[in-house]
Image (cartoon, rainbow, N blue to C red; front, side):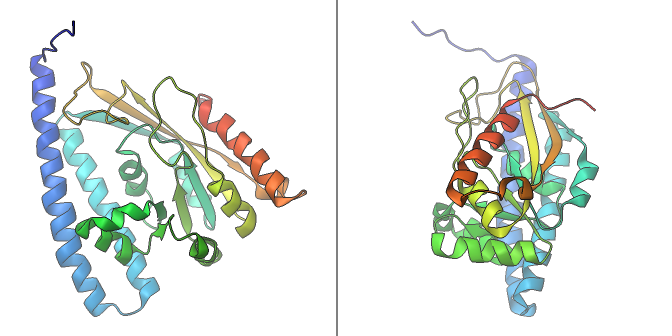
Length: 260
């Protein structure tokens, strides 16, 4: 027999505040940002590269405000460690594990200029598709264009955020990485910055409903870790190198980050 779950007063508040936060995000972030601001960008900024950059900075600022609001409401806490390292990462892949729905929001909030590799299925959402197109994000379904787009971005000192698991991980299960990040790094000759995200207790994880509020307030620790120099993996066949690099990424994203 399943036990009925009862929420504490604090959980009830966090449930209400979470709903309020998502409503704010939906009405402002998607409606105002997508339909109004990005429409103005597409109308008045004809240079595609400049428009992409403005859109990415706009997304970063809005994510930062959104996180401040929901943190102020007492929904969760978060802390960045080693964030100054990101200033060194022009022309670099940013590779992170993916425990929660908020991972991309957290990381994009501290990277004003950041391209993302996103699922092609997101184009089915009219609001999100406008954000993806205006920001110039890379669609993982367009395999014939991915390497060309990535090379252009990285050659122009850009950064690309990738979650190589392809989907949110399941707590207490080993992570399994796809080889896409390794192949992009090798073929575009780009270094890789590792970011480790920890959420305790688990919240907004895969197959978890938004209203399933943990007993304790969730806390995110985001640690900017070491940089992998891609030259160390270029001395062999690309296919073999991609396998070796993927195994190395799996190890780094599985281990607890080093305390500095």
